[in-house]
Image (cartoon, helix red, strand yellow):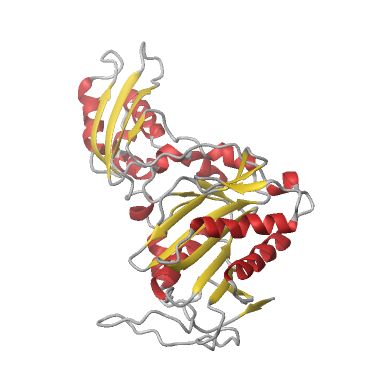
Length: 375
């Protein structure tokens, strides 16, 4: 059963002081009775925008009283790479290839590794109180749903909280976030994702990165339809929702919601804007350094670049280029201009625009080589 609603949750966290007090209620008959025996809620996002869907996660975590109501959110995105809270995007994905392909980049609030999303990947977020936080039970919802839908599928959850198909192929990865009283656990489920796009973008933007950021652990992956070709998307979504209700003894219909609708989710646009911003996506990267060679046209040897990056900005820069190719003064001038700038080609190109316009061909070539490193 599926419906579209307008209104508000009946079980929203009370707020005091300068914060707004939420008191609205859903207009849908499924949610107007806050005393209902069904304390579960199944939502399906109508959006395929990764930042809108991540913002909806944040909104639910911050506003719904998860002591009294659990929520399952089902969502999928247009092509996007989603990195963990403590990861380095330059180390995890090919930013240049993503720009060419129009693939979005997002940093989520939870930890864990990098994942590729597209319309063939189902995302599931299980919201509950901190006391009820149980990732293995959540994954049981997924594995039991798959076994019920296609008994021939050999699926199991691992100690790493992945879901493995046929003892080898990863079809689901996990990440989670715990707050003082609430929790959410989200996982992916590969139904019919574009694996060629996945492999093309999940590789470093540049060589020579040294970082303490959380690294991803590569695994062989497979799509469900590779092993169950008749499994339809709608069948999968309905099967997971049904199994969620069965596992937790709920009786919720699936409710379609628009995560950009501020009448449903007040202030969600601010959360979305923060997640889209450079300061969150790149500026939250743990401090790292890059040491790599620079390929310089017609030089007898390669140059060398050393960059320290803090909060996504260049904190220190040293360029070693052959003295018979360009004078040390000019390479030092380029290093000085870059310090304090964002470690990204567009911002850095703007900073060195005057040097790029200079008549010294070697300086233009050196600028281009350095910008190339930034992805």
